[in-house]
Amino acid sequence: MKAQTTTATPSTASPETIAFRAALDVVGAALPEVADSIRQELADQRSHLKLIASENFASPAVLLAMGNWLSDKYAEGSPGHRFYAGCDNVDAIESRAVELAKSLFGAQHAYVQAHSGIDANLVAFWAVLTHRVEAPELERLNAKDVRDLSAEDWELLRRKLGSQKMMGMALDAGGHLTHGFRPNVSGKLFEYASYTVDPQTNLLDYDQVRKRAREERPLLLIAGYSSYPRKINFRIFREIADEVGATFMVDMAHFAGLVAGKVYTGDFDPVRHAHIVTTTTHKTLRGPRGGMVLCDADLADTVDRGCPLVLGGPLPHVIAAKAVALHEASQPEFATYARRIVENAAALAEALLSQDVTVVTGGSENHIVLVDVRPFGLTGRQAETALRSAGVTLNRNVIPYDTNGSWYTSGLRIGTPAVTTLGMGAAEMREIAAIIASVLRATAPTKTASGKPSLANYTLEDSARAQAEGRARDLLGRFPLYPEIEL
Ligand code: DSN
Image 1 (cartoon, helix red, strand yellow):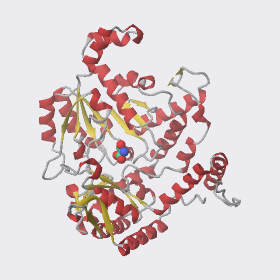
Image 2: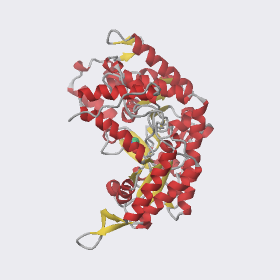
Image 3: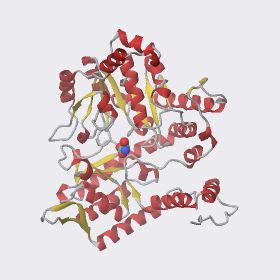
Image 4: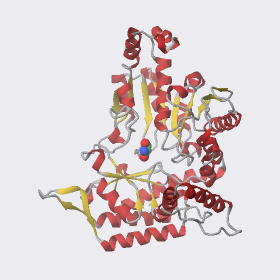
């Protein structure tokens, strides 16, 4: 396969155009189809409305910070204390990222090496286990060289660590897979208990959380979500954790950008109330794909041993991009951006309601709007696929008390971080709501051989699809992605 090469770059081209064109020509010379797919990905992202709540568009500076020889460096350890030679530049980059993270979030300590959200959570879980499990034997066992552990030692270690309990938000209520669910290692490492949302309002009921925590007395109480469309009062969670003797952890992966942008302050600022906070860096925070841990000083030593506990070598190129993103998130424009994400989600929820679309909890206080598609006779899977064919990218999601399971689901999760990065506002949210509603109205499940509605197959009227796609394209034409990049 022959690489598509870029045409001659005009001398007036932007630095971003020059950089990405040259980079893709170099990649294309090595493996043409990969360069072609990278180009095609930009074309796809430019031609579809991106409404996936956990995605965003990072700045060219963030993207370029990752594409270089920092990737070639091993840097196990921490700044100034590495197991490899020649880490001076990685030390400088990582120290800067740590400083920026601490000051942006007001944290006592930051660990920026986690490769992803699950890595960050595993580092945090282990730090809590190590600090909290009351067993004098553990100290002895932790101090021992692993090669000296006898079979009895291993058994004791496993028994002590494997009988601890975490309590998080139920998956169908909006909780995350890494907060104790069986298919994830967290659900195998810990015993699991959950709290859920009120069946009438679908809102968190703090009295129920308190009641459940009193019953279960978990070692670790987790707040944080992947599809709950409301803000959380972390002060109340901390009170509950203190009352039952739990360590309080917040996974702010979804809303870290709203914390950085000071939309969530006071009772809603997780860093102020939790013992330990984990996050990804690529969602509302708009950085590179990666993870991070923020914690009180007493947990710092254990958290800093994330490598080798959970990670192999850190990714210095990604840490460089994290530093760039954290710097960007410290600027006043980022606070405006974060505020607009939330305003847009509220406007989108309102506009969907005015189109007779069922919005779970009746609104949004973050970047997520959760929609129940059952009134359209659809599963989330059908709705997701129909919308993608009409130029709208979002993802199906379980809704509270969902009976369709996590593959088909009954809902759609719609997020505003990416379209807000493009500069869209309330008027565009109304147009997006109209596009989504028009597609849902024109989609119907097909019948299975037994005459029942299919959970996966559907029909979508051609004219409705074409019209929605045209409207999405018009919107994107007015708010182009990476206008400074001409490929
Ligand atoms: N996959 C991310 C999300 O979409 O919420 C979190 O794991």
